[in-house]
Length: 208
Image (cartoon, rainbow, N blue to C red):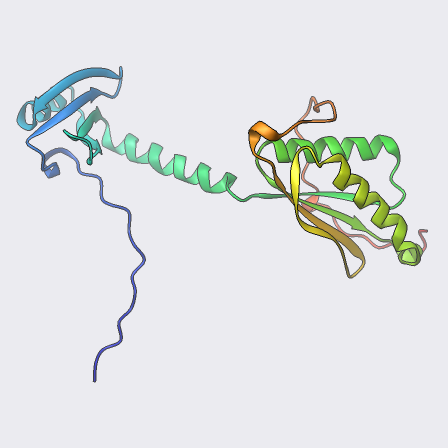
């Protein structure tokens, strides 16, 4: 009976360091000063790294000749991992801004500035309007607020999900426009904008 074949997740290529480097010649850069040391025979490059008490790390294996940096490999690997973590933490992040049916103009403008800031930083944006109590009887008022938000943010983002009633809330999702097409309509905030996703969705049955 044939054995089942399992597909493997492709792994990133291993970084070649010191004597694991296979090329006969390499282009060498001093990592501490970014000084170009030129093309060197591999033994000479290894000797130079050893004199500095550092490692020879292949950073561009497909170049001709391969490019190596003289660095502390432990610190180099840590910086790579940190950059990858930062990249993942920023990619695809969704920020949330919440509105209310009876929001006053000052609070509305504050929320819109927050929303612009999130989109300007490349985040996706979830807009939510929560109905409270008997406000469900006037859904058109809530929809009017969300449509106003949509119009005010038209120069900053595209609508991925049109305003839609889900339970007791109207939700809308937007993605940022390309950076060169974004145009802010409201004055930027002097403070870091707050993500409303942590705010509780309270329902007050007595509020109209």
